[in-house]
Amino acid sequence: MRIAFLNWRDLSHPEGGGAERYAQTICAGLATRGHDVVLFCAAHGDAPALDHVDGYRIVRSGGRVGVYPSSLVALRREASRAARFDVIIDTQNGVPFWSPLVCRTPVISLVHHVHREQWPVVFGPVMSRIGWWLESRVAPVVYRRVQCVTVSDRSREELIALGRDPERMQIIHNGADRPLESRVPRAERPTVVVLGRLVPHKRVELAIDVLARLRTDHPDLELRIIGDGWWRPEIERHAANSEVADRVHLLGYVDEARKHRELSGAWLALAPSAKEGWGLNVVEAASHGVPTIAHHGAGGLSESIVDGVTGILVGDVAEMARVAHRLLSEHAEREELGRNAKALSGRYSWMAAVDEWERLLEEHALDVRDLQRVDQEEATA
Image (cartoon, rainbow, N blue to C red):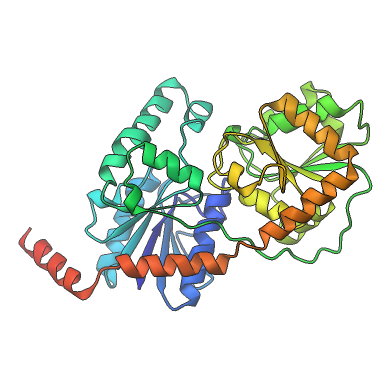
């Protein structure tokens, strides 16, 4: 098959995160099986406009907003230059690419989660209302006859509530990489880790609030934050204002080996995000036997964490601090949660996710009869 994958960013983008890892892992997996895959995403910095990664091509164009029209133009140019695409994967990261409006090729809509909570956090009142209107009212109409893939049952339920057809919904979970052998033991000091992009809706400041609440009972406690983003100065400022800057270590972007070493040494992970489609950070920590504390009602985090079994779900930052205090103090409970988390993480594999995507794409790809019909329609248009 010839597959077009539309995604807001790629992993080389400074704001790339879990959605980008999902996209590029699926692209690479499909490419290894002989499919011709092209990823269309935003241009940034010194990244080349055309790139080759892991057997598939990347076409970068446009910026934060311009990526949407420019990717559709690039897609049509690519289809005319070579063979037409058999199927398009259109990622809705709040706003979709609207490919059904301009392409007759079969489209599969990929939605990690609904952005109801993120719009007012990231944008002002006017833009957040426009964004939520496009996501909640317009997109369900445009994509009403389109097959949809999401990554958790929570996201599926929210999408159906917005009007997506439940008969056209499929869940394909994130996979999990086998943890790199770091040979790093648990840190001697109590250590809490946060893994993710530094943007407002990840609410990393709440992890700093937890640290501030625990500094008396746990004077050696350290918070290690893995990831980077444009919100970093605000997080640094919050740590200083909370008088715990000396215990907060902002590690920035790290390579895979360093990431796994950090996770291996951690005692606990915190996931204070307002919303996640699944929680790849939770599964990555779990693969090292590290349980995660997150909030109820934060989308897929209530699925990637089995409450009371592989981690703990809490209601607010005060409860997050109380539970963190208990788990930092109770070695046996923390270790049991960690063992359960590690066992659960082994159930998810990227190979299984690629298998499901390949089957779904084959079902929806343009067949010869459809191709002839579309060509006739375009010739007479």
